Length: 311
Image (tube, rainbow, N blue to C red; front, side):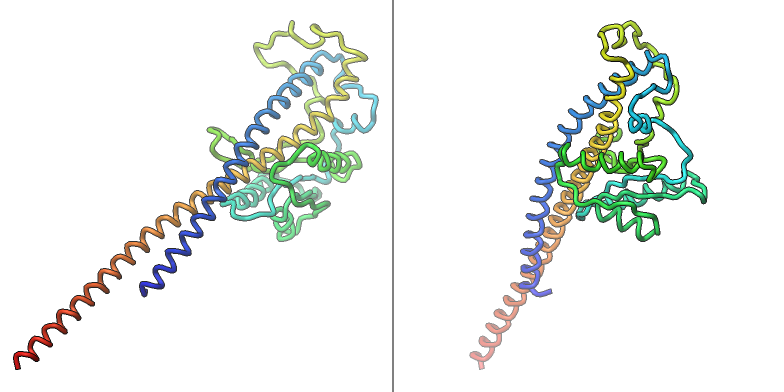
């Protein structure tokens, strides 16, 4: 390889390294911001779940006797003919194994469920990757949504919440799941694909027991005066709980996506630096060879002139 060509390759690789390094820093900032949002929102989800559990525990009737039919339908199980899956993916690339993990994880989950031939999978896809996945495998796509912003707000999430809730209430599907990449599994430095049940809220269909060690004297019903009734308050909290699960999934998925992109760009930057070092060695070696050849030519020419004079 000629010196000019090696130098050109070094310059282009350095420009690529600058771009990937900049993308890495951008993704890191997005991850940090979304992690703060996800952690803060998780506190809300945990408190909401605990409140629902405590209220449900003190009820005399299981399942709760909700007055609103649409709320009552959210906790009612029925024969499962259609299984709805809200598959959260991305429209963008350069995220390493993010999309591969979604596709592989979805295939494994479906294979492990042992669905009968009479049961149909109905997908609600967010992102072109999920839509392409369903089309390639021949799955039914009820609705497709894209794109999702890099830092989704609750107003944006509320659109999907309304759509999913409507699909279940109107019996477009008999069970509904959230499928997405979870961020912060284990040590908090990795992401893993998972599927969470969204509807129906089966926990309210059976009598539950509080966790061991829970002080029953601290139940909400014994600390506060609840009006108009336990059922009415619980009836208002169930939709909020469903909303929190969907929004939490969107935050988790986006955090995982940006984290995967940050790692991919970091790896690309490190690989570019290694290529530059290798090219620089080749450039120095080629330059030394060229200089050596020039010296040899000069010496050979001088010797030839010297012999010519002696004649």
